[in-house]
Amino acid sequence: MGNYTAVVIDFETTGLSPEYGDRVIEVGAVLLRDNRVTDSFQSLVNPGRKVSRFIEEYTGITNAMLADAPDSVEVIVRLAEFLGDHYLIAHNASFDRRFLDCELKRIGCSRRQEMACSMLVSRRVYPDAPSHKLGDLVRFCRIENGGVFHRALADAEMTAHLWSGMTEDLKLKYGLGEVPFQLMMKLASVSRKTVQAFLMRTVEEERSSCQESRR
Image (cartoon, rainbow, N blue to C red; front, side, top):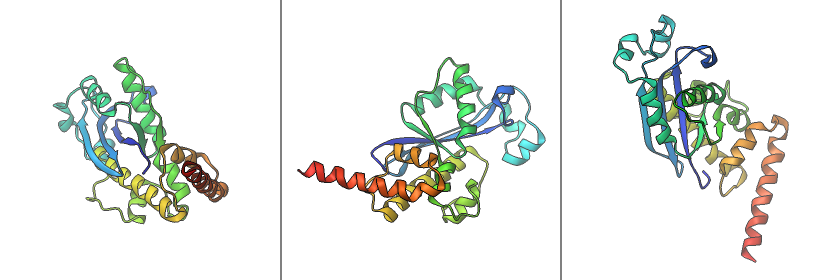
């Protein structure tokens, strides 16, 4: 990884649209430092209403489990402290970003840092993967897991291992010394046809920078 720390975050929710009242029911987050998970945060969240049978079956999170869970204000305040000023990463980040921003707004806060999407990056690093859903990538990359999916902490941990694996694979394939967060952000936005040229240009820039520093 590059010289940075990042928090990988995942939400389980009552539905897809925080703009229309859907709420968080579980949050999981892990801190990545030096390409290793060094800390974690997890909590169920009482959404203030019952969740549907579909969500119970999809996540394994039942209304009985949520009945005694802390409310969103308590959890999001603690989550904001855990996030600090670290970069953020999520799989299908547009989903988690919307929920995070809405929940932070409820406590009078706003997100300050950028959030990278591991799904978009994986499309560039692993174009031959059968799909870029988290579960399929976990199997494609042979990432160790406990077989639990759609629970926030487990998904955050698997995403963290995926992110670490992608940075290591980029280093090995292209001879990069480091893979900065901003490089991963840019990689997510380049077209599939220009990935190779973009990364080779990055390698040349890194080599030129090293030569300049030695003079």
